Length: 390
Image (cartoon, rainbow, N blue to C red; front, top):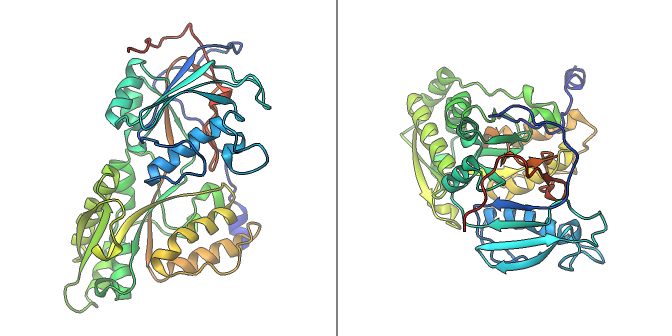
């Protein structure tokens, strides 16, 4: 019966959601121009073997490396040579700015744009402003800011939601030892409110470890809050344990979600204290923590293995044998096993959102695990878009 129910759900490809202006007219691709890009992280090295100081820098560095090195510098006979990819380095100021020029000898064909200028360390506010006034052509923006950006006339491209935000409760802490308390916390969270009000409807409630579009199993994991059951469970708990919920002190979204969890938990009689943590802070400073984990593949078996691999060091869970992506039954069973103890509480799925200027053409939203396809876009110089001010 389960297999039959799972079979009716199928994975969907990444979609492009353009908002804020009418559909763009068809034009023949043209060569030339400089594509202006802004990123939030300050990338200090473009050596594909060099470590990064933060997850944000690592993510942006991967995107940049994919433009310079063939196959992103992931290995092979020619991958480690700078300029073996679609672009070559022209100017490089570590942590601040990088200018790339088209590689005429690229095996995949010369890119359409002549150059890409990447400004680093740009705040979300600056990126949104520059997109709105046409001073930049491309930038990733937080999902929770997508509606505001669209309202300012920015073209918005949203991928399928593939980043999981979840609560991880740490074993060995007295505050998290009671299974009833962990379950009560899971039942108390209003995921729909997080999506509607914090994410501004750019996301989906999460009950399992994979989204519906990937696995077809998400509908089997409830996401609705159950405050009545949370209160019943709370009555079975001795004492008044306080759960210190850590979150990244530099992440405004995590802070807002932590505050919402605290409010929901209080309604059920559970004490949750949001605790901002600096990057690299020890887990001992909190009893639980908000985490953000991105899928590494659109294929459910591969993605589930990657997600469990990221969770294992925190929860002590074991992945077991490799997940058979062709078996929906096993994909469900592995998720169920990982979640039954309520050491992991999935909250929401968040999409990657991109802002584009009006002159960018032939943009295709990258699927899960893919990098920015900037070598394939071209610039319509007849479209609006203010010249960059020096």
